[in-house]
Image 1 (cartoon, rainbow, N blue to C red):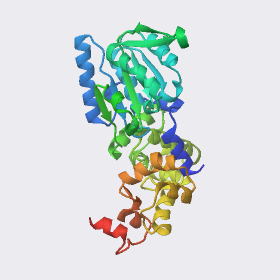
Image 2 (cartoon, rainbow, N blue to C red):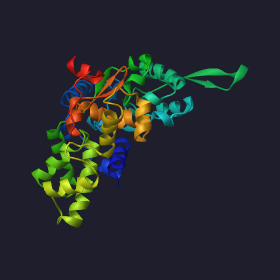
Image 3 (tube, rainbow, N blue to C red):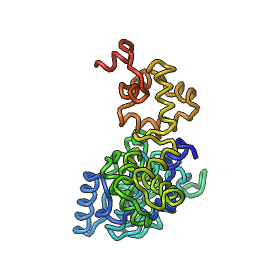
Image 4 (cartoon, rainbow, N blue to C red):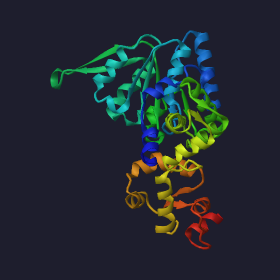
Length: 343
């Protein structure tokens, strides 16, 4: 099993059986994102006191940080049904109308990857979000006519990994926008411990720390690495995930102590050794490492930038001093990247 494939699949996978079973059902069990959780809890408390529905909410951030989980927690906290769909699956206005007209009063409609909605579909959402009405065109040509349908009051919760691709008119109709950030190692440690308890996995402090430190700040990856370490420990370590067993298990996936996988290292090596530290364009980098540019931009680059190994500039991607240290080499004394470091 290649490390790059494992991390790519776990970061991009929308939902798995493991992922569903380990989702916290309430705010009290949700670790991390303290400021976001505080805002959402306040909204829930206020709406329940008024006997009203929640405002529309937009959740943004990299994959695997808990956007879907928070939507389900909002439904539990409000005691309402959550109906889930995704932007690419809504192909026609009739699909959206069918979803909206079948919602019970006060329900939450969760649209994942909402930035991938077609512009024509967005137009139907505007009156639905503002006035709880939707206009449907019946027939075609001279017989075409518009029919207005009244909708029950509902809450739209949108999730996106590319907030910049959401149109301004749609964004402005959300009453609350929350961005989820990568988790600290301590927060991931608490998630790993909770998940280990649900899975009846024996794990000690050292094993928890190893998994948390190598999970790229992402709970979904932490849970999947825990599952892999469980399998390893079951076969080769007597069932206990300690620091030694976790380290050996993750080494089999080519994941080092800082959470970098084989593709991360290849990206840094390519920029440093083949492009002189950069800047290098995304498409050129993608060709050089043999990976799709979208995967580099959405899966690998955010983590490398967060950890200070890489920087995006108008001219392209540039390796930072910590990348040279990671590769055991010295940054150039004077170059375009050297000038960048000194700014």
